[in-house]
Length: 520
Image 1 (spheres, rainbow, N blue to C red):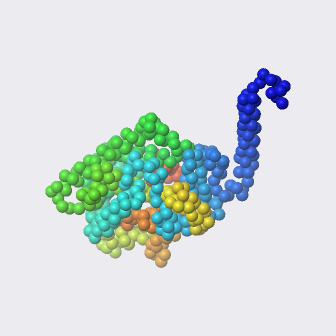
Image 2 (image 1 turned 135 degrees about the horizontal axis):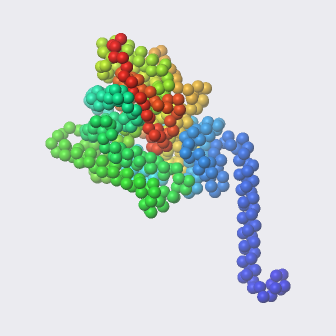
Image 3 (image 1 turned 45 degrees about the vertical axis):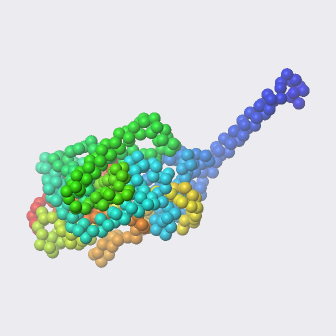
């Protein structure tokens, strides 16, 4: 015994020595088995095909850090290799997420068992600083109030004509003259920026009866406000990309780095929203006309903060989604003269049928007849959905239709971007751009929203779906009838910014050429 051999060594010292030796031995075996696990077990094809490489304690952190700059492509490949197109992703900080590109799961979480999959407090808290309690970041009563009020406005009989008048005026008086000037001076335009400003004007006039005039002049008016909105969306989304989610809270508390920039950007956006609310309140005193925001004023929930959240949410919905869809559409068309030719042939037939000249605008019935154009836009959004992923929180443990277990408080993300690239959904040509897949007997046919959740589905189905198609078709038809749009880098897919919507990194620089206005 040590104490008898070395009587000067006390028993407490001996105990500490044994504990240290045991801890060192445990650490050695733990690190050894962890090495074996990482080095050999995770390299087998069977393990890899089950989804993400989730290691003990750290989850998928190594692969996440390595691939977060290409998150959509990385997760798409993993889901494609999974038998059920569903995979489990774990990260430090108790971030547990099930990602799925399985239509049966999507229908289950968005419709069949909708109430078990709210946004959830963990999800909404990340976007709280920017979106507050707006419709896209709300659950329960607040969501129902906004949904019901917005539904009434979007279903108004006069809304269709109002939208047509607004969109047509914006195109004829601002968008087309801007493109005409660029074609004459051979100036390269950032088409993504132009389309965002166009959509911003339209949503403000539609929802708030306010004309911000963001396309006036050379299209650079109030650049600081637009930049602040872009920064707020991008920096808010970056919070989801931290290796350790707690880091953004620490940076926010210290008010440093990206969190400081986010706070400054949100302050600018809040100022803009407050200006819109004040202008509406001024008009409301002398005018009884109702717009979307006016319907919320005077209700029990209409605090200044709540109204501000509504303004920001609808600007985000109306500006970023349609502009994203159109930007990717015009980029694709730069390298697809065959599709442009088909669209123009359809426009020519519609003009001939309705007695319109080439430079005339298009009416609502004209837009309804544009089956191939709607197919071309839908196909662009299949491959480049404006909202590439969307996440819910599981309320209580259960099993998804494909057999995947999901537990309480786990996230579940349906991956719209990946679904557009799934052979099991779209066939072997799933990665090809083919508008014809949407045409049957010359007529556009829609797709099951759970296979094509570009506009979401179930109770949270996008209220502005039809209005978005009206706006996108009207812009595309008016521009393609008069101009050739050629992207500077048409043969190279633009890098995308992974923010709340799928935006192009660096914009979409294009050259504008005016076409021959011969009516034939």
